[in-house]
Length: 136
Length: 289
Image 1 (cartoon, rainbow over the protein chains, first blue to last red):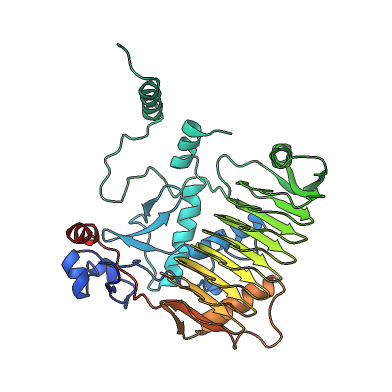
Image 2: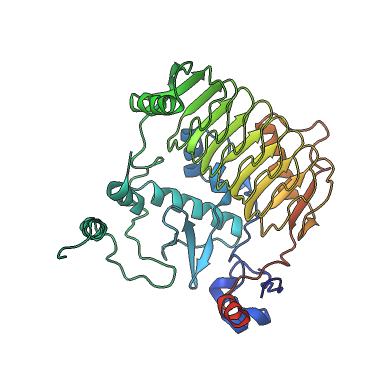
C-alpha cells in the first residue's frame, strides 16, 4: 500500500548476510526478503586502505580518486559475498579462495578490484553484447 | 498468406545470432548468473573494446561551422588515431556535445555548451571553460566533468557514477533521480535538489532552495550553506570523521575547499519512511484496485 512504512532491519555486523538470511524486522520475516541494500550504500571509501591495483587504475584513467568505484561495495547474494556489476545487471560472486577481511572497507576494496578485472576482461558479457547489438 | 512476418523473421535471426555467440544458454537462478571469469587472468585497466589513446598526444577541433554530429564524430575519429587530449574551440552553445564517450580521454571544451552536454559518458575527464545548459552529465557512468561557470537545471540528472562538478551556481532539480556518483556545486542550487535520489553523494558548498532531498530513497547530501526547506523524508544526520576526511579530499581535489574547512557542513539522508517496495506490493495493489 502506498505510504506504508516497510522499514528494513539495521545492518549491525559485517557478516550479517553470511551468518544468517538477514531477516530481522517483522515485515522482512513476513515477506522472506531483506528490505533495502545488503550493504551500506552511503559508506564513503577510506583512502588509507586503497590497494596498489586500484592506485594503478586511477593513474591510468587520469583520476585523483576512485571515481565511479566509490559506489562499489561488497554485497551478499544468496549467502555468498558478491559485487554488483551494473553493466550486466547481475552479481559477480567473490571466489571462495579469497579470504574476507573483517571489515567492510577492506572488503569494498576487494570488490572494486574484482569488478575492474571482470569488466575489463575480454570474456565480459558486454564484449559479446557489443558484437551482437553494436550500432556504431 | 503463407510465410512469416518480417518482424518475426528478424527476431529469429537475432536469437540465432545471440545463441551462436554463446548467450542465453545459461540457466538463470534468481537474480544471479554464472559467469566464466578467472580473476587471475591478465590485468586490464580499460574495456576490451576501448581505443588506445595517449594523454600527451593533443589536438584541437574548431567547431565553428560544424554540426554537433560532426563534432562528436570527429572526437571519435581522433581517438581512433590515438589522440588522448582534444580541445574543442568555438562550441557556440551546441547541444549534446561530447556525449557517449566510453573511453579514457582529456576533453577540453573552450566555451559554453547547450543542453545534455557530456551525457552518457564512461571514463573521460572533461573541462568546460564556460556555462552549460540543462541536464549536463545526464546518465553519466564514470569520469570527471568540471564546469568553470554556472549550469542550468537538472544538472546531473540520473547520474550513475563519476564526479560532476560545477564551480558556479546551478538551477533546480539538481541530481534528480541520482543513482550514484558525486555531484559537486561550488555555489547555490535551486529547488527540489536531490529529488528522488536513490544513491550517490552530493556536495553543495552554497545554499539550497525549497524541498532539498524530496522523496529521496537513499544517498547523501552534504550542504555548506543554508537550506530553504527540506523535502519529504529528508532528514539531518551526524557528520562522521570519515565523512569529513572524504569531503576534505574531494573538495580540495577540485579547488573548492572552503577556508573554514568542512565542519560546518550539514549531512542530509533519507528518513526511509517512504520505503514500500517488496514482494507483496503487487498483490496488495491488486486487492485494492
